Image 1 (cartoon, one colour):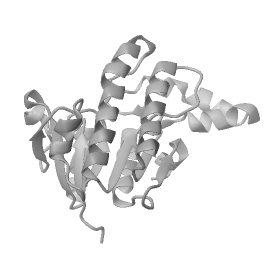
Image 2 (cartoon, rainbow, N blue to C red):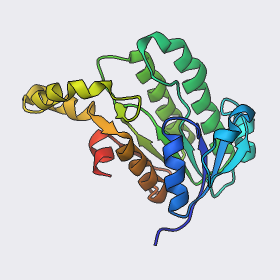
Image 3 (cartoon, rainbow, N blue to C red):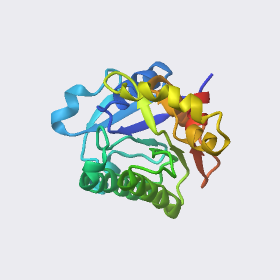
Amino acid sequence: MTASRAVLVTGATGYIGQRLIPMLVARGHRVRALAREASLARVPSGAEATMGNALDADSIKAALRPEDTLVHLVGTPHPSPAKAAQFVRVDLASVRAAVQAARAAGVSHFVYVSVAQPAPVMRAFIDVRAEGERLLREAGLTATVLRPWYVLGPGHRWPIILVPLYAIAKVVPRFRDGAERLGLVTVRQMVTALVNAVESPPEAGRVEILDVPAIRAG
């Protein structure tokens, strides 16, 4: 029997959050969702909607309790090289605020969605997410970091056309590691990995990294 955990989710009304929260609730976890006033009605059923600003550390801290697992899902939708400024304004600002709030509140576990790295493209996005990982380590938080490359799901399916190229790359020794690290995961695999992360935190003070193969393994 999985122990019930208190979970605060930022980015709760987004692509991943809308799918993660129902699964956490179904497994008996006590979920609160941080959202702006305009988005409160979109918080999935079963979660306690909490009004707040995920770009503001004080706002996040006000919603946190020491026993919480903080799942940070805030990010720019449909990342692309053209959105470098948004990555700094939203992704980086939000993780800075979340880490500061988590440290001040003394939360038990921080779950962060980063990105697969190193990679030959999307440098601005990778730099911001790598900075988020650095902030977690510097803060001394107990954390799980998930590193997907692209999450396939409704409205996010175009990379399926690349599957044959991935298959070829995996049999060529010099491309094999990159093909595994930058592989595709489904939204179901991602949500399952996040649930597992919530339920199985690492040792206190440790930052655990889950790459694409680990996400796929569930």
